[in-house]
Image (cartoon, rainbow, N blue to C red; front, top):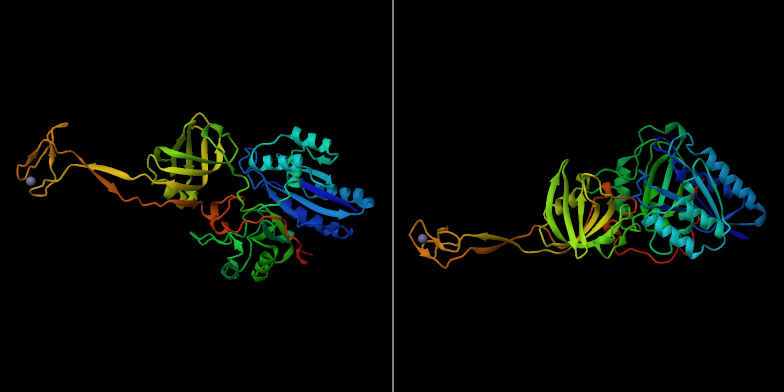
Length: 442
Ligand SMILES: [Zn+2]
């Protein structure tokens, strides 16, 4: 028996397809060839801040065991299925496939970590493929090979989550998705301890159904395969489901965010967690974005909360100079108009400075607010005539309307990788010991 890791990426386009759907088709085909799956299909989200990627940036890996004599046949099936189901005519869709055998070396795991947290190059992927005698096939410019190798190397031995995805029948592609809303609300209420981001709490919008022409009817995310399987049973679709499958993923794990020890180390397109003191107070920039700056001993950086980020934007607006915060988010490169900017996905307020205002003193005789007699010349009362040449302004501490704590953009504007509030404390270590029997249909 031989162990095979099959990675693939970049088959879809904004107008059609979904690489997870290609994975579901492939699972169906491979199971007919008597291969054994050693893990759920892995759906790995790579760095969402890569400038040339506007969609989810998800790559897939299937991990199987099979007899050596069918390896060639498996590879042919994979390449053929990817070729037939990719939007090859679309400019910017450059599919890739990679095959890796037996154990995943640490160099490939490191490559994956970099692909999730930063920028990796094609030449580094090809070098690893040669070095470890893996195989790769690229279509057009073959950029998908990068994601293919990255999906192979992310073995998700630490925190991970699951998603069950149900697919539409082709005649319904592009039409409005039909699903009973009350069944989604009920599912959310009954499974909310083990599933996440079904419904946006602020707008009550259903989040399990995507918009767009892709084949996905809905996807439910959760902590275990059992949980998403059960959630799926509670949903009443009002259109046919062609197939469904459970994926093991890095959704909701914050895998893309890397703690950066100083502002000077922040690099464009590398998502960060960075601590600093508010150095420029929040200002509102058209159209309704809030921007403030933080600094440490090494430099200063802008942080932006965009309008869609709702409550996070409201909190950011109330920061004052000297507040200590930890900013989490993707990094936008400097432009002619703006300096390098952290686009906030979440923010932890660590310390709030007292908000002080200076007021004229009150008259000790009649209680009326006194008037200044000139700089350092004291104050006098207009009402009773009291004068005090030693009187000075009094300090008043205003109540802060925000609290120390963690603030996260609402589910409707979260990245696939953003860890939502409800997942804190549920982080896993170690792969699942076994797979549930019914993880796919058909
Ligand atoms: Zn007075």
